Image 1 (cartoon, rainbow, N blue to C red):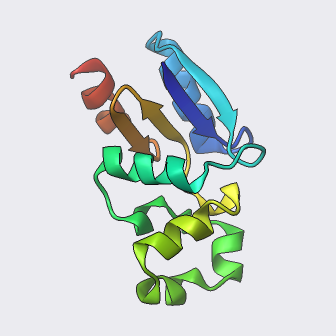
Image 2 (cartoon, rainbow, N blue to C red):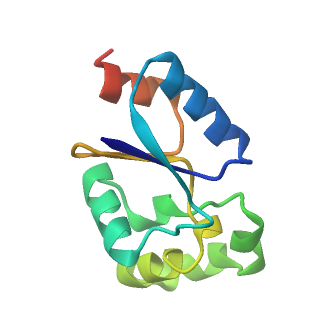
Length: 119
């Protein structure tokens, strides 16, 4: 079963949910603000997404800007980044769709179609 980790008010998350529903893809939904992914979950997401930890950051978020993370990330280790991300769901890029050996970060329709529908 896939897990759809999202922020319900996010327009990109709404588009992704609509896409999943239109393609009859089963998933469970999790509010990223109420149930922040743990450090261990983020490690697994990163492993299956095969991308660097900095790709998990919500670079357009208010908190990201307030914390001046653009300047701090280059000095941080991947471990430090994942530990920071696990403290607040609003720091994490969303939506995340994870399970069955895949993790998709952010909604790019072509990527989701390729991975989930084999198109």
